[in-house]
Image (cartoon, rainbow, N blue to C red; front, side):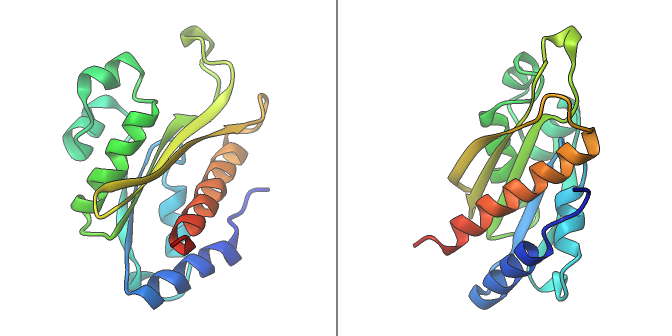
Length: 164
């Protein structure tokens, strides 16, 4: 795969510009791919406020206000963490919409992580509106997994934007 769904990105751009809304992203498992995806559309600065990639509990707590006790218990990978990331990025970037995603793009057998998955959350004005879990193939290439998670979250986001 190794690419972004450009039609999907352009669709999101068009919807947000039409509504006069903006988006910010907080990511870890996607390693900045969401930021790259949004920046690829023409007029990106008209709808994309920016983003943050934070990998560890220290940075997620400091910049995204995640609960450090819960974060430590779950290795910063849970639906709750994704939601806290999405909520806070709305404020951090003064965005109407916030996307948060955290998970595993590679196996971590020493921690019992044998499947690849991510939790995502979508916020509107700092309030939760959608969340879920995305799973990937067991033996997928980490870069492929990051693209897959990115495109899946973008797909979920467009569904939320168009829903009443």
